Image (cartoon, rainbow over all chains, first blue to last red; front, side, top):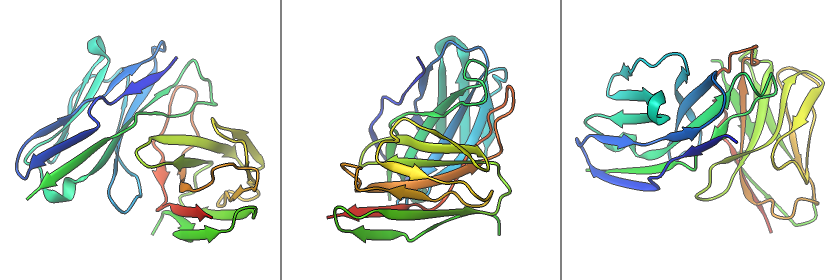
Length: 118
Length: 116
């Protein structure tokens, strides 16, 4: 069965610190997709990144970076020089692309609540 | 601007009443989804639709119903049979999944439903 684990329930940092949010997943599929979403206090989920299982390159987008390691089934998210506006709940999600056929769903982690304090 | 709208943002109902939450998208997406989020919880899928006039139950469909008569619209009805309807409801849409491709979902602002 698919599973996504975000072991860190809450993280609190001081502004300008770097912070890494962990995501560990389980799947038997060889073709799958991983996602990160941000949910600010307003409630709307904001898409951050999609990565397929064949692309293990790390990605950097401004202060955000993602480290995908198939060997450890992890897809971790790092925010460099955190800012107060980064305060939000961050969700990791997984979707199998082969075994589930076209009726596939996103399997969500329970989220990590990040508080960045001034 | 392309996006997803959900209205209203806050909704209050008395127990025993059905209530319909609206979701409209102008992203030209075939697939649409309804999720429920409870405090401190992840997202749970209620229903999803990959094409007009077709929809499937998600993980927690009991007490809910949907329709998909238009590509742009996917309303969710919370019926009186739903035992614990108070929650935050999120609608999303995406490009329809391909054979080996899953696309990202884009979300609306959500509707916070309170039933007393």
